[in-house]
Length: 174
Image (cartoon, rainbow, N blue to C red; front, side, top):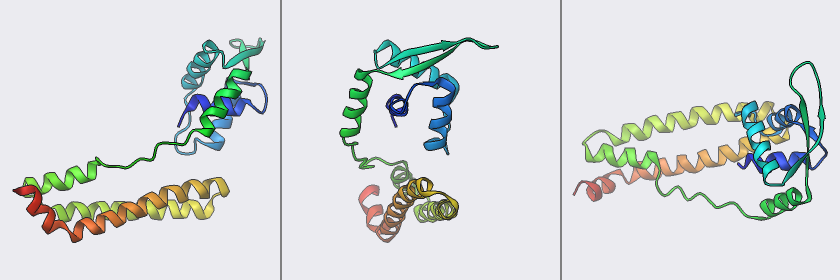
């Protein structure tokens, strides 16, 4: 995820302080990985330097001065360009799990056990996500669905690989 573009998009609704941006980000996108304040301010500094945001005001308080940031026209254009650009599909052609299975075969370890252990872990995560989805709002349901669909695809791969383990062993152990 592009944190800079996300913060820019949040600024389109109006100027905000770094603290407000962090809170909005965490509320909408950071359930599992909230932003650190340092990440917000370093990103805002870079966006400011690149002309994508400007300081809309500075407020003095008991602590350090609080800058209020506003998106510039260049920032709006940048967000529009980013939103219109499709994400590169992740083909997962080199996965750690595949590497573990092949190495297990090459070292005469039990690759089926690795697949079974991974299947159990995937099912455990799917139960957690399904429970979270059931209790969550629409946004949480959609992000959980995204993760669940990926896990389901992984499970199909695990089953297919388990069914072909003998042929894979013949191919890699030569």
